[in-house]
Length: 228
Image (cartoon, rainbow, N blue to C red; front, side):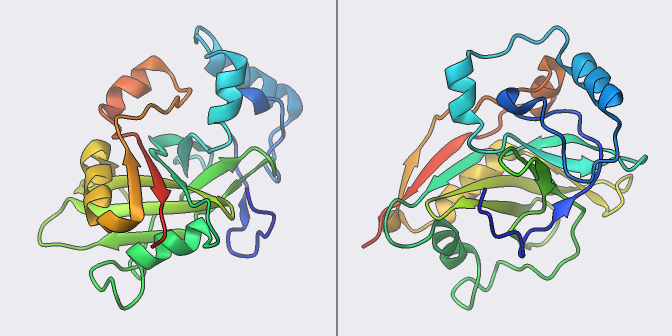
């Protein structure tokens, strides 16, 4: 990811999953002993059929999953990062997304509402980092579109989209769900003339089969910004 961390500070906490080619890296400030980290990695990866090395290397240029803290303060995978965004021209990818999801031209989207702690694994920096942007589109009732954005470099951002579903058992009274519907809403919101969409598109999340099944359709999408 981008080397400038002033806008997304590292987050300490234990890890359960991360990209295949970076399993031996130590997250900054994790506070987890080396032997314990090794045991945790072995317990998580046992029985998994991992994708081929070159394919995993390419996919892991983007972070795979959203991490959130559990009741013990350990960070673990909760949701998929289900949209890959590129902007190969002069405009930064993050600026292209900002133009669609922020500012006076997009009054229905807001950043001001409280949010649960959220992070993605930065395999280059060896640490969890908070998103660069977190926005919602409120509406009557629940099922608000909720988007987290991580800037990887000038040309790429990783985007996670879900719908906020009311659930009183959660600290913020909602949980993320309906990933497929959320990415569809994001695609429909983006200006047709400036974005090339690739879907169906497949992202390898490198998670246990049970968790992947529990997520259901994730709405994997590749977006490319095409300037006027």
